[in-house]
Image (tube, rainbow, N blue to C red; front, side):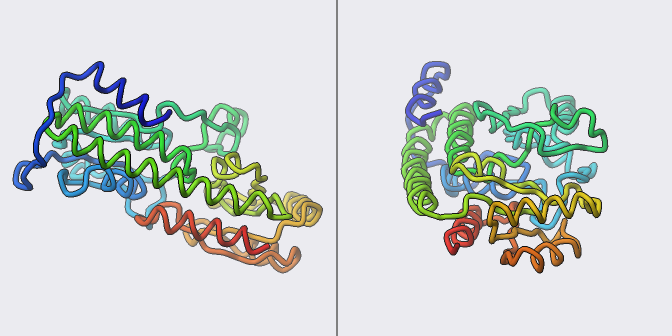
Length: 288
């Protein structure tokens, strides 16, 4: 969704007035699920909101269970911005809404076309019904996420509407520039596939016409037969990059790297520096 369209929508449905930048002692508090959301939110809100992050960069969103204190803190926020498809979020949203019916709860992935079939949660029969939760690893998705954040900020803090809108427009231009640069760089690379342990780059791959070859999911190693098929496919497609995550990866990554000649690159999709991670991914793919 383009930012101008969402701004128009927000202005149409919200009675908001322009105002000066809010003083720091009466700032609203916004809780987000993950640190990359905080990067986007801060780019829009600056220092005009307190940002509370539920999931640390070293935590596993597949197994995360918020504590009672975490739920209490989040329920006292002015808004809760969900990533959208992380496993813990649905139940958490219900509990937060029960604790505080006035809490504004928004799915920041609204408007993003989901990708299915990359994740399963113990029931492979229904794997194709599960949306890939890593929406934020796409620059184009990040623009949509930012638009949803802007609409929420205007709703909870209308006095700062003009401030948020101006910063959101600058962020949108920045994200558009990043997207154009990545597309220009990756359009010319000869290898259009890459390996990844945990399938966290599905949306990034879709944006730039790449194939993500995933090795495992949820910390589980693939079978010997499955591993051989992955190695053969990676060899056939000429894959030269293997992305790993410290929290998910196993010795199988070393085997695949050795047999395919792929460079191993460590990424952290939950890193607070969202842009830095996007650059790491792009630089690695552009080397081959």
